[in-house]
Image 1: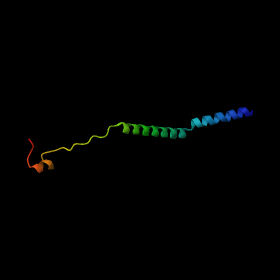
Image 2: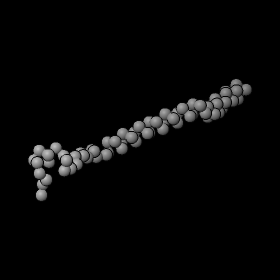
Image 3: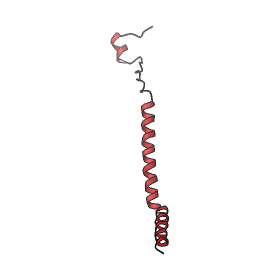
Image 4: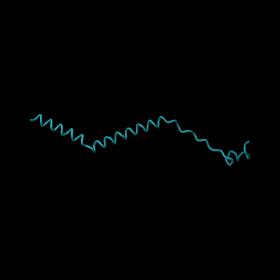
Length: 72
């Protein structure tokens, strides 16, 4: 009888842990967040550095104004 009771209690605890949906949801949220962070870091470290933006030079730019005429 004692063995049967122990087995019943063990089975009951296993079923309870499997039905613990709140705990399962929290576990999956943490797991997903960690995976997202690893993935984000991997993407950030594998990207090439941003290209330098070359300033656009127009006829009214200070560099042309200082020479006083348009280049040919």
